[in-house]
Length: 456
Ligand code: ATP
Image 1 (cartoon, rainbow, N blue to C red):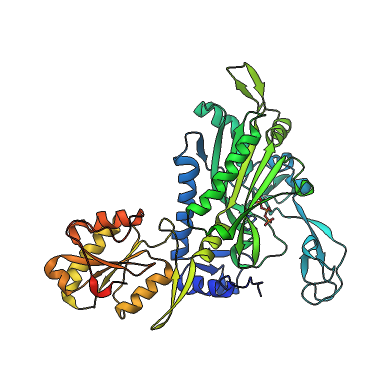
Image 2: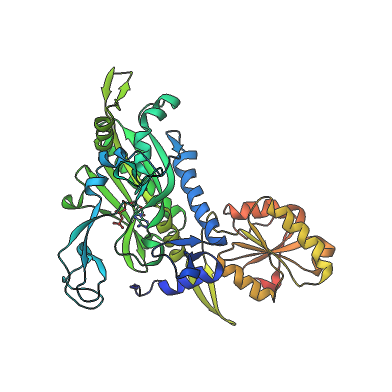
């Protein structure tokens, strides 16, 4: 059972919609599932890709001071000694003496088992990194780890990127990729998984300018969620207390979202100082300092790190978009996803399965398919098909009716207010393009007209 914030979409409802409509499935379900692992279905993979695309666009494509990277998941084991993960990436684990369940001791308030009230063992530290072996011999010398964060792949490539791109400070490296943590307590759907994806930036700056760049990234990252439709009242920044900060961090803010389970971390933005580069210089014996031509100085840059979770973002976007409206036919469920995030942008719906509508409908479908993810649906009544599209968050439906065969016009219906306009097929693509980019429905293309019968 999951906890639930009153007034927020019920987590169970969201989980069930995700399963039913093909957003997210439990992993290896036919074998009874795999704890804290999930699979993204046909719609989920589109949504997740769109989240990653939107992030990449904001932090790499639209900036002059950022480049990308895709480092390997398996890294030299010394990486994790240098980063401190072998020594310190651990949570306190306590077992219930009665029901044998395991808990994170630091998450328990009264010292009793949250499940049965039993007595707990003394906590012992449990390293969260997954271990495996390279090569055929399973001995200590061949131990490697599945990375618990993507950041270290960026740090160790700092000299490669500098020499290959001739970048000058300040600049940053962005990476999206899988991370693995053997979390002790899981649950809450895709909020805490053992295999998940991160979107991380390491932004290298001259010491002394770090506070200004830290502020910049905190603002940038907060606004990214707002610009993608998260409601302001559901998002907040929380500064870490001094005793909560990692020993190397000078400052840290969490972007928190009001999930159905309560306010929780969505992303962390930390001023990591020169800790990581210095550690890797020490353990590798390589010089990881930066040479500033203007001042003829060598120094180790400071690093600002915005670190976000893809899956937590997906959960936040889904939870924020979920809406229900009562109407004549019962309940309309709508996913009001930002258009850039919606898995399917347009649905092409012939009014009926009548054969005469088929050629034109397929022609429209095939044209639009070249530009966007489009669904073709001719099963059941038009009303039901609109509802199906609303429930998966499709911004626009295009309906082809018998009149379309004569006047070469089709109807566009929007998801959020169910407004309808009728437009010539020859301007359909450009009209949809404009609408997907935020042009109001009321703006009609030349030759277009309002379809009064369905006006809301
Ligand atoms: P938490 O306190 O929730 O365990 P964290 O502070 O350990 O998170 P970071 O190490 O700062 O997390 O990782 C950066 C981001 O990666 C988090 O803000 C979150 O979005 C994501 N993340 C971390 N652990 C997980 C996980 N087990 N499942 C899904 N996403 C995760």
